[in-house]
Image 1 (tube, rainbow, N blue to C red):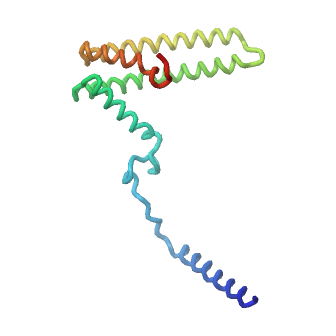
Image 2 (image 1 turned 60 degrees about the vertical axis):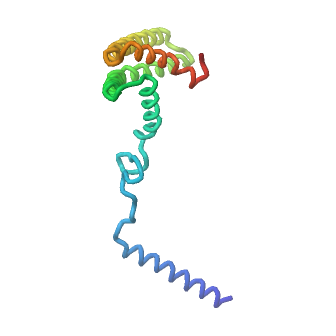
Image 3 (image 1 turned 90 degrees about the vertical axis):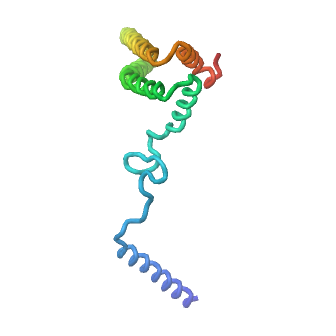
Length: 170
């Protein structure tokens, strides 16, 4: 029994010291896959990153839109440019609306909500909705310069049907 215990302690000691010696003499970093070698990565070089999260779905949507509207390559490029511009231009408006709606919800659920503050928030939400509608209208006018009448009709029809499939509406 004592011999087994001594032998086990000796082996454990050797293994433990070997690992320690290896760790102390190992000054090279562990080999890792280079960022981007196995797919898209985030800024730190790990994983797919938040920007690539929906990249595949976005690519599939673009292909479906290109096929549904029968877009030429130049039309597709111009549409992507316009969509990016619209997204960047409307982003602050959407963020402001989100913040206002959150503030409205928080005020509404208080034990004693301030009715003047609620009225002010709803009025500001309405102003942002008007601003968003103006941006959408301008964006559609720009798209109409790229698409022909048939393509524009099809795009508007697709736009109307967006929520129907996803949420079983309409």
